[in-house]
Image (cartoon, rainbow, N blue to C red):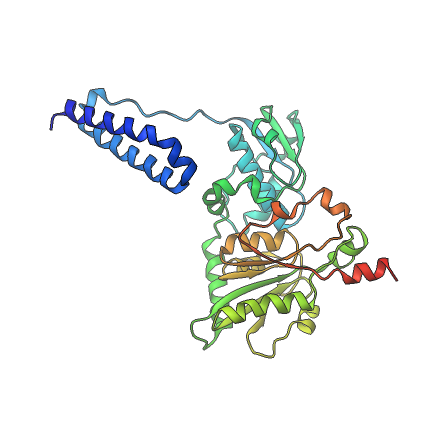
Length: 349
């Protein structure tokens, strides 16, 4: 078939497909994507059949401009949220992202992060436009003005970056030695067990023990929540092994039932060295988290089923001005409501 005839055939097919695109898009998104892929395949075939001199030049993406950064505040989970949000919003607005040296120092201990670092002297000399973020994606963030923007706040919500999940996961690729240490630790914890399903359990305590009830009118995970979450996996999988990490390990050992021999208490529980505990959680098959960004990111990187503590504040909690449950936890994650009776009993003695 001559090249001219082949091109005419392709044009006819493309016209027919175009007429159907609107219906396909609204009736079945997967079908729409499939048809787009097929059109691209047909176009590629025709392009290959044309003489070399008639091939169109590939379109080039506009270069990223300016310098965008984000404040580096909080612990590991906060820093990961800030990094991912900067990465996504800078890309969305067409600007180059840079990170603080302090953020690089913490994240690069365990991850192969790629964003360039801006020197402290440069940070202090640039006239930044500070732009505050709340912790969920808003339409105005699609068009943030400024070549030199510093994002501020504690952003962590998946609504900022989930549309480029693969890129974010690549940014948070563990160093090889971290992966090897995690797998070796899990293999030792498994022992002689066969066909084990690892479930990472992160129990956030520390300052939250006092901050949640006294400042935010909320609670943290209790014994009952952890029992329900662990029973979910015990009922679903034949040989679960729960790997527990916490900054309150003594409480965990007293309140988590380990009589079945399927619970392993890991880590030293110190908040100052979270990298090893986080890597263990992220290399498990599934996740049980309580509250906090550390657990959210562990579930996001592990990728399996995640159970989280839901509705852990009273309806009038000031925390809800800063936080949205639906923007913090992926829709497919499984929420177990918290027991708010300690707060209710305190309010109504």
